[in-house]
Length: 153
Image (tube, rainbow, N blue to C red; front, side, top):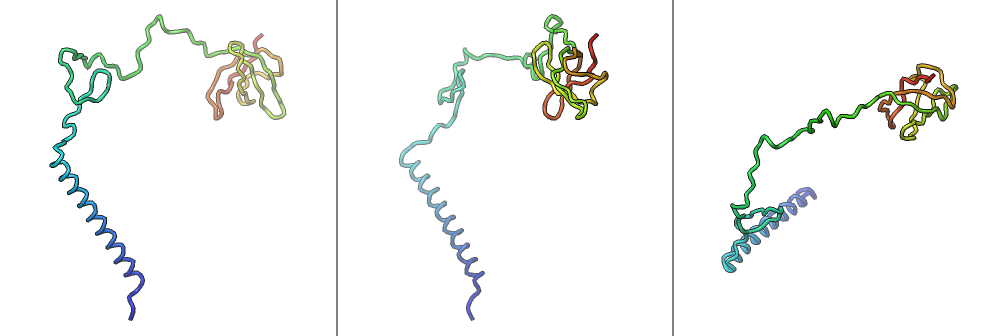
């Protein structure tokens, strides 16, 4: 009887694995022999200079900078009272387009001239095109949406 194809494949895989292991062992021995003959050890220690470059010479101790752990800020820096700007969440703008049958439209902001989407669910008053309105912004699926839209009188 002949051997099955599966055992042949297993034998071939085993031969490849053993050959790979033997090649690796030969390369390692060659590197060891080369290191003995050449006398090169490479860089035993690596140092980093003040500019972030790796060197083989130790840094000058007189140029050492001492940093206190309390001085390191890991969080967002605290804002001072003078840096706070008064942010008014209520914005004013003009209705550029509104389709009452479909229930959506767009409002142009009066400050930065950006268009914001608005839906009928975000309306407090009924609006039409050209109305001056006040609104707040809310993060939507595709960007900022105008909500709590009321007509300015």
